[in-house]
Length: 204
Ligand SMILES: C[S@@+](CC[C@H](N)C(=O)[O-])C[C@H]1O[C@@H](n2cnc3c(N)ncnc32)[C@H](O)[C@@H]1O
Image 1 (cartoon, rainbow, N blue to C red):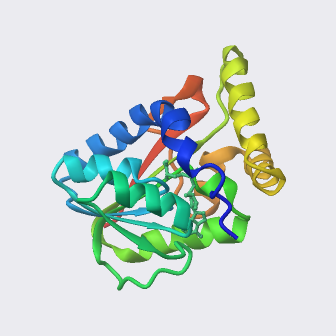
Image 2 (cartoon, rainbow, N blue to C red):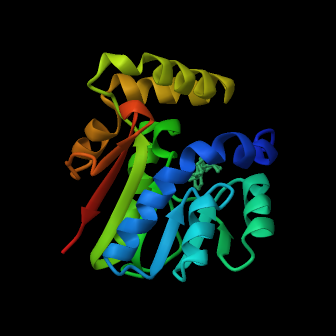
């Protein structure tokens, strides 16, 4: 079953504008580190891969949703999109300069999220980058409204999706998830009143 079939057509017009600054932040980091060949895991409608392609990079988007991939291919014909499971990639080791994962880890069962991250580590070359953008716990109490809005969107996505989101946040969000996966670090930038962080890990 395609979990995103109902949302694919609405994703870019409704969610896209909120994600644009975050994808831009990821693109800046890729450019600053001279990353050219990039795999965007759980690429959705190709917002990130499309932006990277427009900037002259060579992105490959991977997603399991035929509906999301169909939008991606239609809107970003110069990028490559592949139907595949990001937790079990068919790429060789060290194939990419960087892997990006935005807004996917929070919605997966913990073992699948960990497998996706492990695959990202495997397919990047030594010295490559892993960029993760996902939900985190803000320190300020002023951000209640943004937290409520995010929680509402996650609830609309369905019970299973919301359960995974809740567990991810109750576990401490992306900082904790990455630390438990052996990639500790603070966000280089936060968005949405602190509820989203961009995390960059470089591998030697
Ligand atoms: C919330 S969307 C995020 C899309 C995109 N990364 C963005 O920033 O707009 C999550 C995406 O992850 C995809 N996805 C979920 N599990 C996946 C898996 N195991 N392998 C590949 N894609 C997956 C979904 O189909 C969906 O398109």
